[in-house]
Length: 121
Image 1 (cartoon, rainbow, N blue to C red):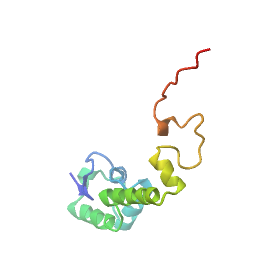
Image 2 (image 1 turned 60 degrees about the vertical axis):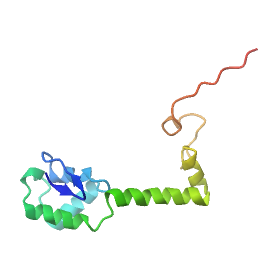
Image 3 (image 1 turned 90 degrees about the vertical axis):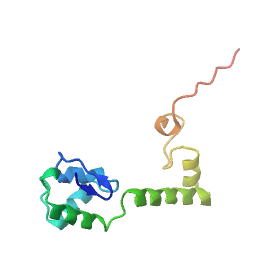
């Protein structure tokens, strides 16, 4: 099994798709890496030579991936919360951040409904 950026990528999949299992590599970046290294995107991971795997490892080292990327994103959110800007406060309160309405919808961000009892007359 090929290990790239500390992740065991699936053996039975095409290299182009298997690279997307690494956090920080999507399909576009995967295609870019394969074009730069000259590895055929249609090759299955199990059919890669050791040289190809080494090329892929070298090409992925220039990107911020996996734990470093997660840490970087977490620090960016923490910075927003620390300075007390609107985006940071919305993140802290688990509300939509980008101006979406919350009177209706926004269930994913706010969680399941909490029923409030109606007033007795």
